Length: 455
Image 1: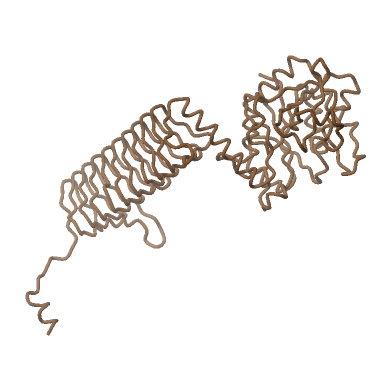
Image 2: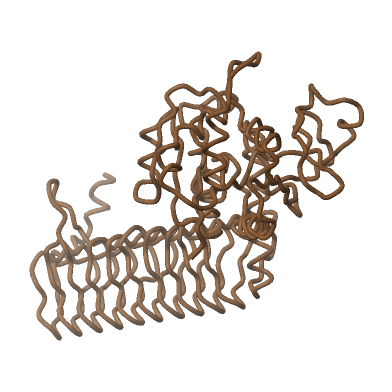
């Protein structure tokens, strides 16, 4: 196991976001920015993670509960000051400390793992993650000596013409040896126009003490981009989703129109599945092989088996088996479990229900709080009447039952195995197995009634 700790700086408000929500909690690719960074750190091998919180501290701590330790930066006095808040954790740690920014959601675990590996190989006291920017304006430049070591980091406003010509910039992401970092933090001062403690000054201190400062350059500068505005958030969203789509396509998934397909980073999809346009697949959804999803569908936190066809559907927090057909215009609500071979047709809503194998709900029905067996046929217009104004009640429909059109099943009620319900019935009592349930008034035709009304 690697001896690596991550300190994630997540205390800032993000004024340019113009939001009551802490900046790092804004979502990109289905996760908060700080969650994306924390996941990358864990992938890189960070066994201990400390998140520096400040603005909206409790919200950030709640969002990451159980995943990290927290240190509070009451006043935001610079990046160096933020790291100072973790001095207690540093004092008890002998290893490498990776300092990350909570607003860099495009960071990948592979990049951080490479940085950590090269830091260890170089036996450096500190390693700076750098990037080559097409337009480095506004960024601090990384100045190296002929041996590749970092001599200094100079801010744009302080750089001379030769330094301004350098396109390698400081991303604000570092690896430090804990002992050297802790000692250098003691030497930080706030003697500058902003009255803040800068982490870049740690690099200067280590250089002055003849410690080795190394640098690792990201292959793609996009991975290091920080988010400070809604426009940048949208750019990151596009990049992270494009990355996901490319990965899926590389693994055998057909994306018919990447420009109109939105898939969260943690979604899993099997090979030979086709995703049609205008489809959203979100959260922890998992889709099997040889399935067809969309168009115009939204799938959230839903498990879908092999060979399923889902179109014009909103499904969330439910399970769909193999060889299932759903849609068009279907709403599958939480705690719904659709077994193999089921057909659910147009304008159907299913909620908190088990639908047994090869059962059919072809159209125009509401099935809620129901335990349905295998081989059941639900006629058009069927409603399980599950709510009495105070409590929800369950309906049981046993195997091979046939429910006629325009039926109300008033829960709690059981329709026995192989039973038939006559169309237009309102069933309030249990129907025994193999029976015909009829609950409607006998038809009575009044001859001549209409003619009399016209006189």
